[in-house]
Picture 1 (cartoon, rainbow, N blue to C red):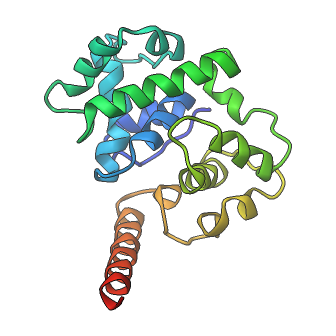
Picture 2 (cartoon, rainbow, N blue to C red; picture 1 turned 60 degrees about the vertical axis):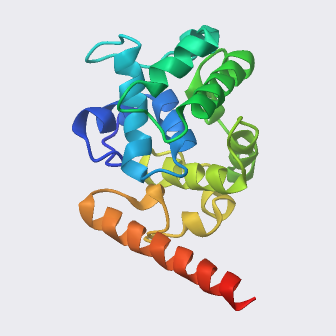
Length: 199
């Protein structure tokens, strides 16, 4: 896996996301209740604070074995990695512990050699912190930008798998598509708000 992503809108952070399956999973995990760029910049910040160096990577074994308090402190340092650094630190460690237990710490093992889109979605949904929607969005990202295209991947990703749908991070390839995805999210929020106030 070595592609150019544009999710963090930051060259170093995006380079890490494009070459590190674990960084991509952690970015997806962080992508809630904060702006997308902030979430996907998180893995680079964590790698820096762990002392991984300029070309450094995240290591599932190291994170899984880290002292929980120390790891939470690392995410809480200013600027914080997330709006809720303590709970996110716990989730990241749970994710890494799961990867160590089930995939020997190899995040790419989640999708390597997978037989179908349905199987891949099931594997993603089994990851700590990944519900159905997050699994579908990440599956769409794998298919659209990372070359992971098992049979039926678009169907398994639901609406997020549709070509040029601009619904999620899976469709962000630069500033223009980021603006389209952001506009779509705002439309969805407005529609949900209108629906709840109509009750």
